[in-house]
Image 1 (cartoon, rainbow, N blue to C red):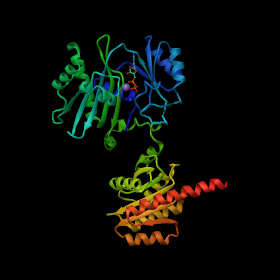
Image 2: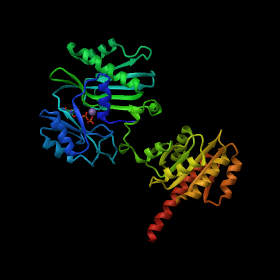
Image 3: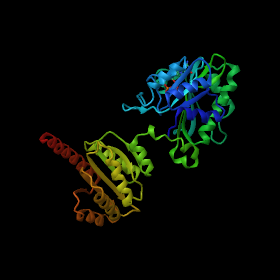
Image 4: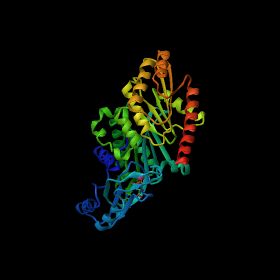
Length: 399
Ligand code: GDP
Ligand code: MN
């Protein structure tokens, strides 16, 4: 789960990381009021969306008066901000953060990630702040400093000092850097984050080290033990298909193809998507309905998959190990009787009680396309999608 910049800054600041003074606003009037309240003569207004690259996309503006803040934010609220990280549909701006502008002397990149190879939290830093890490590693790989944290002892002060020296931080400011690194690390560890990124971390003209931008991502599977973090979830920033799925306890990732997938088990769902592609089709989604695959879950899955307007055929692929094919078949039949769908549905069942399952499907009277193997199922789904496209375009031609 992602959170907003202002939320990440509040969290990091509670862990001892210094951040600029700032306040949140939900309207242009409030943004201008926040600046007056804060005082000073120069502010930065920042669109709060779950994506980076806002600066280049017009989502970060430096303003010299509250009138300027009002007009700058009037152009932001309710708009979609499109950055290289949002995709072409962009993300809606419903909150802006107003910050006291700071005199930047140097920009540093600082990231905390999970390094799967070493199975450790890894710190990645570079003196080339402000640039995206992908660009830094392509253009200035030699500038990147890395350190891994030994979990038994945590991030050590000497490691922080080494990073500070490698970045060329003046000796009088090393202690601030140590505090910043340890604060970020503790926030990462204590809150089960999977990523903390401060880009840029700045050194100001008056000798302070401040997190000017902050991004945090949390492990969804650990949110249950951090209710205060779960509450920061902002559905306006999520793919609506994915938030509906999360609300229903289904694991769904929206994709761009036309063949909807309903599968039990993440591995089988991946294999199903691969096989669809191999058969010449494009999956519309990843969906793991879980081991249970009860009629209710199957019905929910159909509604979810059908809420994607691009879906022109559905492939149901269920392997019943602990489950039973006849129950799953009942579920499919019940779901389709209650909520008929207007696209071809291919069903492939395998495992326990498969014959009974097939019988239920055959006797249901529903226009289901049955398949025995996964290859066959994928080929039939692709063929059904192609002929469905043809029929529909013929229909359109007749109209
Ligand atoms: P991002 O583009 O989404 O990563 O947004 P950032 O918060 O990183 O802002 C982008 C850029 O705006 C930063 O790299 C800075 O160069 C600039 N910026 C942000 N805040 C300030 C500020 O307080 N003062 C000045 N001078 N520049 C700022
Ligand atoms: Mn940034």
